[in-house]
Image 1 (cartoon, rainbow, N blue to C red):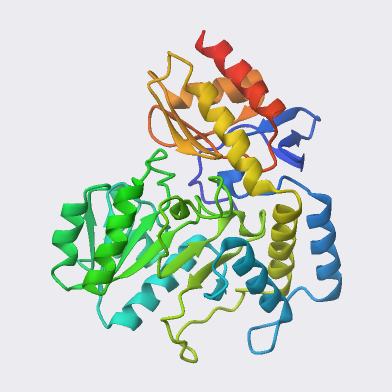
Image 2: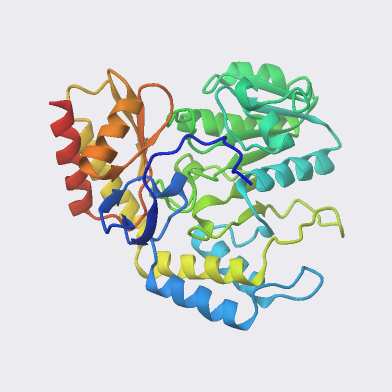
Length: 374
């Protein structure tokens, strides 16, 4: 049997990692400034994380959600404390797409309405409802296309109000920062205005923080820069440092009904142990603060480079706009300078390193990046 050939693969196979570095079978060291699509939050093979996962799998790796699991309670309490949402409830699942699916479903249950508003160039996942809310015709099959989803221009509050004022919408979903679209940022004023509109028209606000959350931007969630509190917040990627997991943070206005949501694997013992370890490391090593500090340093230094068209982002979620091919730059960084970066569009290099990155690693990247540009 062959693998279904849907991924464009670099001819490199990392076999182990440590902190912000990965290594191939020959021991070649690569600086990882992409973290596997922003998944590696506390660094590769963090000893505390490895120990927590190993201890848990030796005791009990899985049992279903038909029994109590105190690890879920511990995770909810820690996440509430560190994120500032301790009055919210937590639903645990397996991925970002699944988190968005459940958030949309909750909003529809809550309002009794069916339409969803999303924004141009948004990416919310590849399952049925999530991909319908994704503005990319290449990945939306005829089955996924639905009149229940409409799109509005990002940062155009008047356009959003024209939609929401019809009274047809159960929810609006917005990324804290659009990652796949090339680090496109909703203005803080737009986020505040959108929150006011959702309250005025009785629409649920869903903040998709799957890539931009979990400390990546220098605050726990990117929407916190605007000072808004969404009704629902979806998370995944960095939540368990590589173990598949997603979650929905749910405001107190939502009432749980037995069996309205469910999942076989969501919130299993091993996933919870991994996620608890992530929060423990984030807190003890001040990784959110580090993301803010090193991210600001990187952004500041990149903005000094005249050859760049634009530099966008917050914290360690950075988009570097080139006057040329982003794919070619990423290849040169990887194969000539042993640095992993990501892409987002034809001319953008995307940086999503682990939150433990230091200034030494930032300087290494800046030196090699400038050498290619020059």
